Image 1 (cartoon, rainbow, N blue to C red):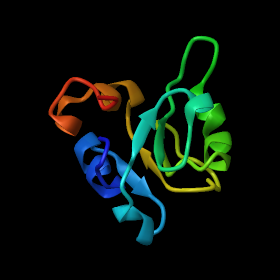
Image 2: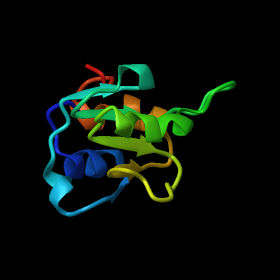
Image 3: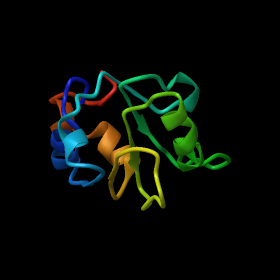
Image 4: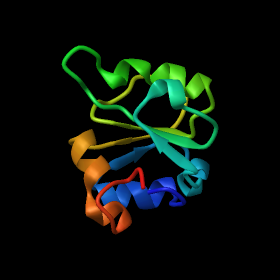
Length: 105
């Protein structure tokens, strides 16, 4: 998914893009599931875990300059665009998103 537009990522993941039309063509420069690693131009993939839910960190990644989020939940008043998917883990590992086994490659 690196070097793909948000629109193309949404299509590849079977997700729904939420955000401005202008941002749809923005290119993802990097991908992370760790909110501490979020930076300008990145796509933050929110993964729910046993103890911590990555969705709780979406506001902070936008403060760090993240381009967008990938979320299983509908977000209220997000600070930036996001792609809503049925499963973040399935989207992250979908071969159709990159032609490989992971979006992080």
